[in-house]
Length: 172
Image (tube, rainbow, N blue to C red; front, side):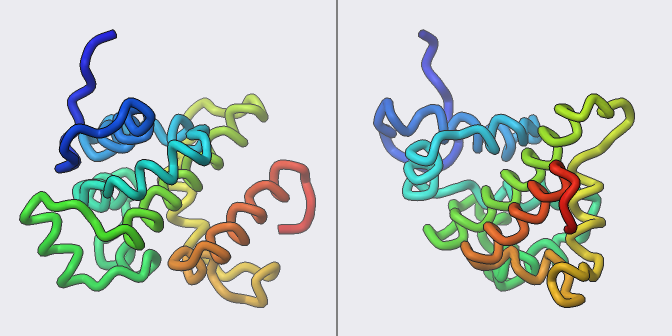
């Protein structure tokens, strides 16, 4: 098995961390594989978060979602100055931030998977659709936008549940 190069400033990650780190580093390098991030095991997600996620993933997400970095930072509850400093210095995010950022990438992967399973993938841009949906008021959230909830674990679970409800045709 070839060695995995992981540009996440982690010295000697354990073999168990490599799948999560490799997937997150591919996103940070612009090779968006959001469904792969969505499909990570819980252990891989935890290990990847503990190892730290490259701040460059913020730029990749903003570009893929066609949204300003400031809007993305607001959704994730990350201070603009902190995010910009870490991106410029090519640093990793804190553990808390490292949990929120892949959480958004997982949501894009979930949307991609839902559309793929419905058989209507042609011309669909999951990242762009997700960014538009996150910014729109949603009746199921009492008129709040789903993006308002992406900065907490419970909020991300709530928003992910709404995507799952859309897949089944339930009210979302």
